Image (tube, rainbow, N blue to C red; front, side, top):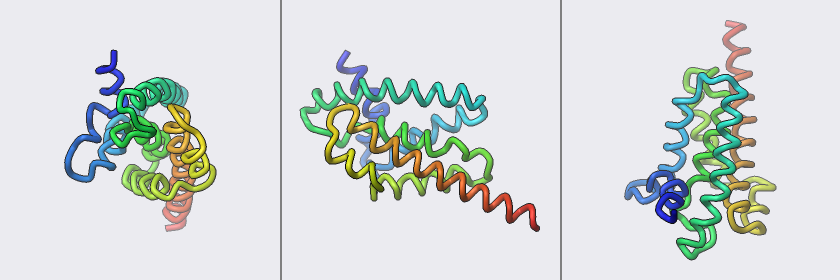
Length: 156
C-alpha cells in the first residue's frame, strides 16, 4: 500500500526528475487537464473533487512515509492546483500556458489565506489546501484574462 501512496503523492515520481523538479507536478496536472478539458463542467468538477479526496489521503500518508512535513516529493497538491487553475483554459488559445504561469507564480508567493494555511495547517489538509486556494485564485485571474481578451477580440 505504501508504494501506491507514494506513486500517487509524488505524481508518478515526477518530483524526482532532476531538471526543474518543482515544475513536474504542475506539468503532470497540465497533462491531466489536457485529457479532461472537453468534459462537461460537472464531470470536470467531480474529477477535481476526487483528486482532492485522493490527494488528502495520499499526502497525509506520504508525509508519514517520508517522515517530513509537506515533504518535497509530494506533488499531488500541485497537480490539483493546476487542474483547478485550468478549468477555463480551453476558452483561450494559449489559456493553458497563461494558467500554468499564473499558478506557478501564485503557488510560489502563496497569497492569503494560502500562506496562513501553509504555516498553520499540517498533514494532508495543509498540503492540499494551500494549492487548492492558489488554484482558485489563479483560475479567477485566468477567467479575467479570458474575459478581457474575448472583449478585445469582439471589438476588433
